[in-house]
Length: 195
Picture (cartoon, rainbow, N blue to C red):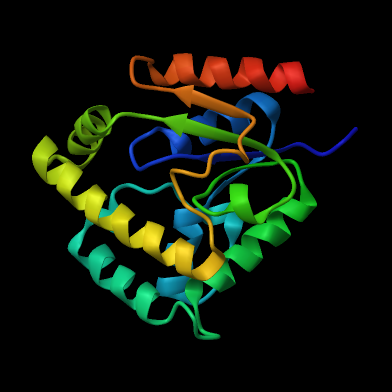
């Protein structure tokens, strides 16, 4: 049987990490949270994709904002953590039987079923504010700034337009009015049709 690879992508607050966890359980796939691996690289200088945890608002924190500046400054150096991370993620994808939430892999990997989870600014501000216990206005301001820098970083590093270049995706699913269970159900239904 062909090895299954599912790559979930979308703006902060779309639910990709939680959906990845659910899809992993349903299809017995290794779950890889790319932001968790990135934090391992920064804090521990090593990678163990089996221990990477999903993002709990780190990149929107003060520490995360400072580290993001370092990402930009080292982006084109051989010490670029983004390049190190993406090389590792491509290796994990090659092994197969994985579901991954990632901001780069849908564009960098030729393999996998690629799914974009769409969400409005208003809804994701609500979700992130609830997760991080901050106001919706503050949540949206933080993620918009992070995303502006991320878009610029990936455009400079790899040449793709994050959030605009959607032709790589086999499914684009609007999650605004759906519960996590409903989103997971729709993704599972889509995957079952393909396998």
